[in-house]
Image (cartoon, rainbow, N blue to C red; front, side, top):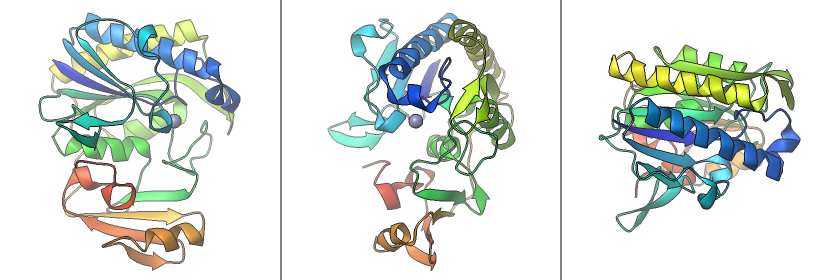
Length: 270
Ligand SMILES: [Zn+2]
């Protein structure tokens, strides 16, 4: 069974302040967390594992500190080369049995969430076919292009509730709860990693039992972004096939789920 783990940082075990996300301590906690989740996946029977660093586009994994195992492919950035071309999430295709969202956070504007945002602080609301969602939704939509089911989300309580509402059958690992927008509390990192490991094993079990579904918004998809500032909408509105809906909002219609963001950021397939 081949699994793709997409790892952000804000929702990782033991990261309890915005400060930690910006410093070396956050990176250390992220590395410990993904190593432990990767180990849990292998122990649960995953025999090919791709682990991708997506926080700020990547650059947080230190390769010689990552679990060394021939079954694991470490992707240091969320964009990488495949067949001589750059693409988003190299290796994610129809041979992948499950998609795991580690270290994730709730969408922009979520109340009671730790560091909620979607992609950048410039986006106020992101929608597919009129449904607001965050990074978990748009990443799962990309995976949905190949019918890859979403089986696990790890993060704060708000991120887990968001995932459960969007992806029926998903297993969630709730490792913290916000006490302010930039602070949260939860078990010590070791406990949180143990919990995550158990949830990874449950997610693998859920995949085997066929309880998880790919996220497949209806095609063609209308993708809408309300920006915080007019200037961002102005700029995005210059791109090909992008409609300006109002002062702050742009929209594009796409024919494939893998093109969910390509029209705006270029991220997707070549
Ligand atoms: Zn992040």
